[in-house]
Image (cartoon, one colour):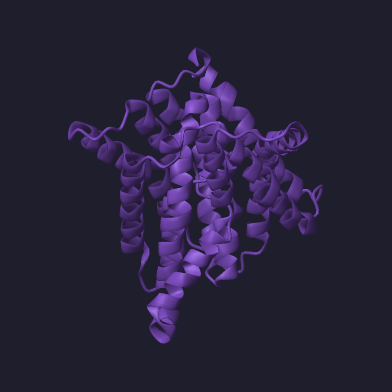
Length: 323
């Protein structure tokens, strides 16, 4: 447990530092979108490009890893909508709640945290989960959230808008470029490689700090008071139901002979045990959903995840020192 805490404490401490910096106005609120843009368009793409370049392409796009993860994500989405869609939570807000229940913070937190815990081999499965969430989970939930608009303007238009949103994200493109470099056994020239490496090295601390700042900002822009019963159960679905479903389905797939290794399943379970993706609060704000409820789900899952994720890693026998 001590070895796991030695990894998880600094990660969550940087998230707390970002939150306190925003709350105490050390970091101006006007600077947070710029900080988020730096991570999303510069630092993280370079980090993912480097991982993609150094990972075999079949590890980045493993069909069995994708099948297990996507099936579980769809199950979590359906379950969360079913338990939360009621008179006080309309379909749009139920869909965004389902998105934060099924979309872990793999981009900003998960890739560096799981690599730190499990070694570089964890990059392939966790990047698979990033791609699945960007193209399948988020597109589906946004399309469901726009079901009313789809009825008026056509389901095809709503679906195309959701996919267009995923394609405008720089992360999958950086993964694709890295995969292409891996296939071609290409390497960047010296000065360019140094630039990419410097930006990639800044991704982890700045991304974690940004998560905290974004969470504080989301709370400031919350215009509603959300009862605990409308957000805490969704956070618990994220932290408990999602990883348990991945573990159960993955174990069943292995029993049926699927070529899914125990290590790949471990990475997927821990990815599912991560807190909700912080940037979903910005999506909720953009699409006119109840960003107060979404922000509280993300905040609750992030605070609780320090205990639940660390405990999950310990129970699953993770030993960072041995790696």
